[in-house]
Image 1 (cartoon, rainbow, N blue to C red):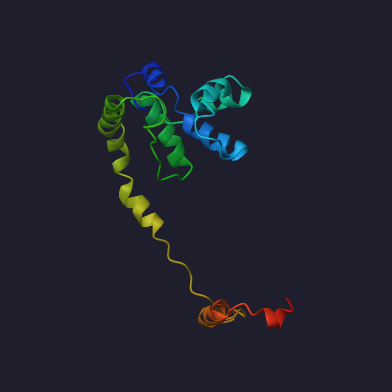
Image 2 (spheres, rainbow, N blue to C red):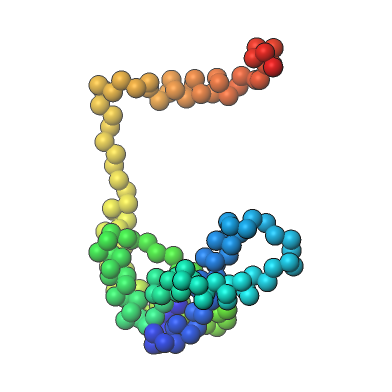
Length: 161
């Protein structure tokens, strides 16, 4: 969430960790009977726990354009060349999401556009050819053998079942 000030961005991003919480909740509890759990209430309780408080502290791209540029510079220094902006998480309005993306595009992105040709070149890796001394089965042979195994039907009389 990008806003004119860090405080405004944090306020607008209220609930941004809900998506993370929901994944954790369903991973721990499995499917629940529809209508039996108020997930938002569970989320509000989770935010008060040490794990929830830790998740809330500054791990996302939330802040003013200057704050986001600073964090993106750290990502770039770590060779991160792509990020995902999940603005629709939490209780954001459509207008908040649109204004955040517009501000981000206007104030933050231009500085990083110069990197685009470099990152595109860097993502096209040319892998070295296999040396002739490789003793593994050639790929074509392995694939044929795999296809043969997949075509073989289960025959109980051969397994003693």
